[in-house]
Amino acid sequence: MLTAVGFDPRTVHTGFANGTLSVVGLEIPGLRLAGFVFATVATGLFVGFLYFTRTGLAIRAVAQDKANAGLMGVNVKRISMLVYSIYAGLTGMAGVLIGAIYAVTAQVGPQYALLAFFVVVVAGLGSVLGVFVAGLLLGLIQAVVTVYIGPSYTLGIVFGVLFVILLVSPRGILGRGMAV
Amino acid sequence: MSRASLAARVLVLAVVAVLVLTVPGWAGDYWTRILTGVCMWAGLALAWNVLGGYAGYISFGHAVFFGIGAYATAVLMQPGRHWNFFLTLPVGVAAAALLAAVVGWPTLKLRGAYFAIATWALAEAILQLATVVGFTNGSSGLVIPSFASSSFFYYAMLVAAVLTFLTTYTLLERSRWGYQVKALRDDEATARSVGIDTTRVKIQAFVLSAVIPAVFGAIDAYWITFINPQSVLAADITDQMVVMALIGGLGHSWGPALGAALLFVVNRQFVAEFGDTTSYIAVVGALVALVVLFLPDGLVSLIPGVRRLGLVRRLLPLSRPEAERR
Image (tube, rainbow over all chains, first blue to last red; front, side, top):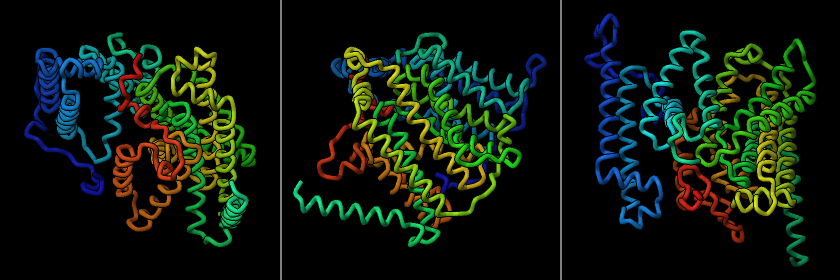
């Protein structure tokens, strides 16, 4: 990746970039609003797919028990491949949005991977409601720490919180995730 | 073993020993430096292997212990304090052991991917902490009074690596404790049922695998004479240990050292040829994929007679078979 695209940070320029929307006295940057709407719609569609289609049911069955899902006639290999491609596709979409909001280099991956781990672990593996709560929590921690303590403490505190939550409640803050 | 082949072995060993011991004399500065690095990474990979290969806990936070050793030495050798280098070693080792014990006790209750994520989060948190607390001088780092003797550092790293190998080999392959660790890896419930205090054994393995990187971190800081959080605490140090152990042979007594030697030399050659290590990372990525798919017991399994443990399939967090979940 690095060899192919180089080290220079790049940004994605979009039509929304400079527009803002005023909603009841709040100034909302258009780009971030678009990101929010896009993320909500994508998540909604994904949850619908996961809970209201046969394929979604098969995915959840595979997550619970590969062997049993296979016995029930689910093509485990195909489902795993499908999940991996959905995952890569969703991550790619998120990447486009992040590229539009922040500058990106080929090295941003690991940091976002850790933040994604934060959300998933805090949510509890396999819990979709938890993902919203955890995502909100992550955003709040980042914003509050940055404003009231200092930006250089943000990541340290985020990872400290992740560590503590893993120890205290490994099934996620709502206690709905899969067992360790 | 017949008398002749025994004699041949002793002869080969003696020649290798003499060659290894006289490296600064014949290898020149460049290769002495590379071989110093080989010793360091061999020791680090062996240390990681104690927890990853023998106890079955994949840690992505081992750079922390390396960094603690480096910082203990760097802070204590600052001009105001200027301790002797050898006196700073026990301090770093004690700090690493303490952290490993305190953190290990709750963390080792987690398994698989959760343990990996927890150690990773811990390492990142400590990396960030090191950039904000006062005594580390933040991201500008610390400069250590230099001691320019490449042969001293070669021998220091060599002795540390050899001691690491002897310690881990004796403890894990030639002692009751080694059997306890392996039993815990293979089946924790059964290990417990035959009377092994698995919590204690896990923490002991974690501490052992943490103090060794602290020693190497200390020597490395003294060798490089400049450290900052990114150079001694960053995740790529851990990644190197993991990849070296994986490619050499997870859970093998000296496989990780082989992986370390190979990868480090390749890494340096990439730097010498292309001036950076980014293309090296691509090569390593491909190598890891190939090893996991086709040679899951690492390079040592190419040697006839080496027992295959098949650990990669069992331990890697994201490829765990369903049999583990009971």
